[in-house]
Length: 361
Image 1 (tube, one colour):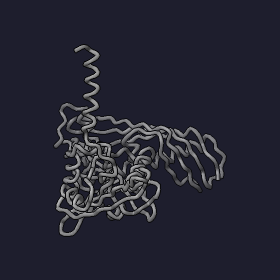
Image 2: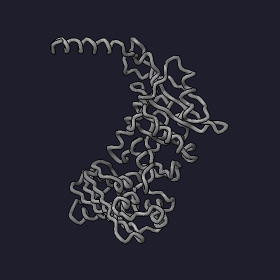
Image 3: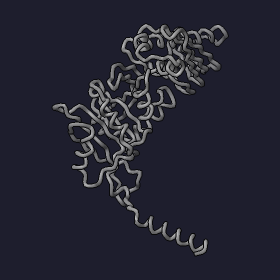
Image 4: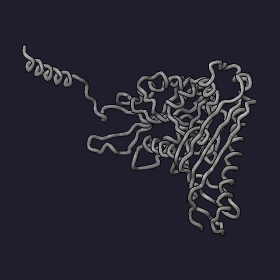
């Protein structure tokens, strides 16, 4: 058999194999894109899912959705119970958003997170979050006719990660959850009649929600956690208000002291522009500019120190200071670190350089 014959035979066999593979369209499967979990009655888990409905003659961008809700003994049984209500095979490989009610998160969602982490069908880029109120009510809200609830919430989280909110996904949370010297955090979602907003961040200790911060404080947490180039902060200034746009924030950790008495330094350097000044009737001069920079610096310094103190009181480390120390010290001892953490000296140094000034009104 010559080379040309072998090549032709290989191509024919490939076509035959492809033709034997099962081919199921979206109309023939129940594709779950969003799931939510609440505390049900009698210690059961209430699971709610949204399944886009694609008719054969409809566009695939249709926002029509089917909502199914079940009660089960565990999150593992939710999929099985959902299947009993569906006339089509359930598929969860496209699951993009998973939500947990605040009530459930305060009890502990470790077991649920563990199930997600072990399921090979799920994407690690999936978003997870905590809802104020029932996850079921938020999922069934029907906020827009242009896209499914899953696409809406996915876009909401992604968009805000480019601004004030820190990066968050199943991958990010699992990394913090399993790492030594680090604790996870999740966005808080709130339903506001005809829309949903990210209302803050929830901090967890071993899968249990212990504290929240409002969206007004999220910018401060993000600037201590990661480098970013966007985000806005407004402040009272003199007799009016100033609105600042971050155009470049860089954070650096430094570990000092000994293994028995460690010390931390967090350095944040921020470049910004003032987009708008309301109620301020002064011409911009060098003195006023420096005063604005000092106002922002003092504000961030105060908020950062209060936040770190709160982390110590709750014995949580969402900044991952312990994880950073572990990577820098060969002699790192987790037990000693945890004992020292509540009294750990953390010096936050913030500099703000405002390069442009906006309009007066």
